[in-house]
Length: 74
Image (cartoon, rainbow, N blue to C red; front, side, top):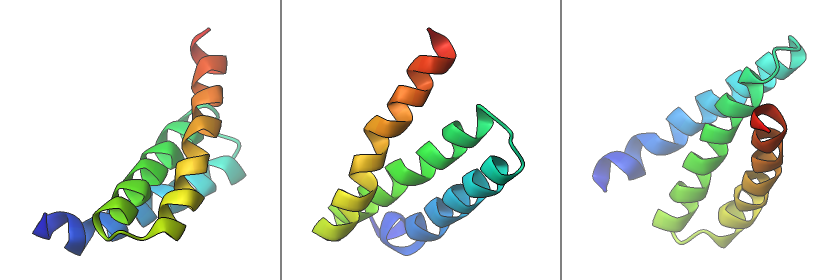
């Protein structure tokens, strides 16, 4: 858990920012995969730190990315 508390937010932020960059570069569907990983990481970080605001913000994004995954694969 120490690793998660120490580095998970930084790694997740890198994924989110990379996903935003890929969106601006119109690199679909890679943008939703990368940004989705960041959202999952931030949701988990919110769970570890018992931060409900983080869990709500990024937890709501996960089903939205799931819709993008469905569009890609089906």
